[in-house]
Length: 337
View 1 (cartoon, rainbow, N blue to C red):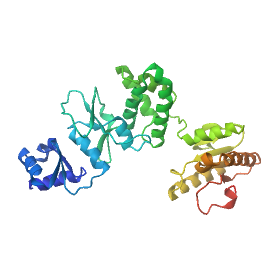
View 2 (cartoon, helix red, strand yellow):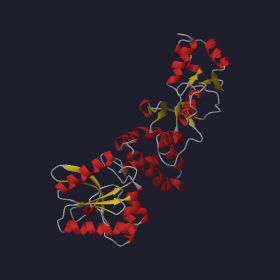
View 3 (spheres, rainbow, N blue to C red):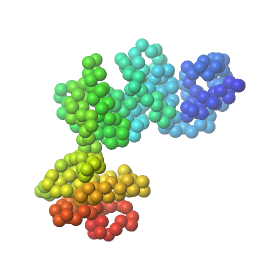
View 4 (spheres, one colour):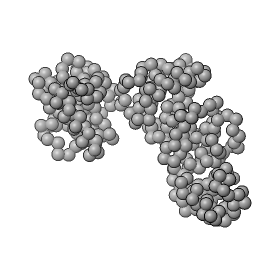
């Protein structure tokens, strides 16, 4: 195979990029590397990296370039990992890449390089073609920023929210969190005290609030002087149906808090309606509070909750949505006007 065909094949799986350290493994020589740099068909991004001209200059290419330019053994790291995995509040304006200590690497113009004492094999994954640390490993790095005693309380709130958001996106599990705390705290890693406290509040098999909408719902009820609901309770008849966002402590009432991002696609609606039907069959009344009402029309949240409480007390097993429900063709009897 001609050297350029081999380079193009390698680049096809790397956003149009080829790194110098990859050339020997491709069965090519450094003469071929120099030919690529001189040909004009490959843009020179650094002395260690070339890009096939015409390949899309995307965010994915920029991230891939930063990791490849840093050398073999490098992984996307910290806040850049969290941004790449889709967690809110993080961006890729500066790309952070990590390498184990002991591996040599020249400075990079494409990435900020971090040296790690150790990287466990199961803390490294490939996501959308990028070698990166796991969300849990990246969150631990973020927790280290709040390891001083004067920042622990603020860190507990901030990192706790980050963990819950990652859990909601199925990027972390509480079992993995517990295992990581048991393993890493013995090595004196920064952030251990904070992560241990957060893990204790999230034991394997439990599920704390995973949405700021649920916190908002509780505040709306409290501000209105309404009786509070219990949070994250397993509900069902003879066979548990799953955890309800909130449950009335006295009445057979389950209340779900629905965000627009996770509950508006046709498949989301089908899953939700199936779940609500099972709750009705298990003798529960179901109230559904929608995000728009939660933040823009809190009085509708209070009214909907009061209505479904009355229905539950009367033994009426129906599903009632707050007025902000975006589902088309919902039966009028299922939506408060």
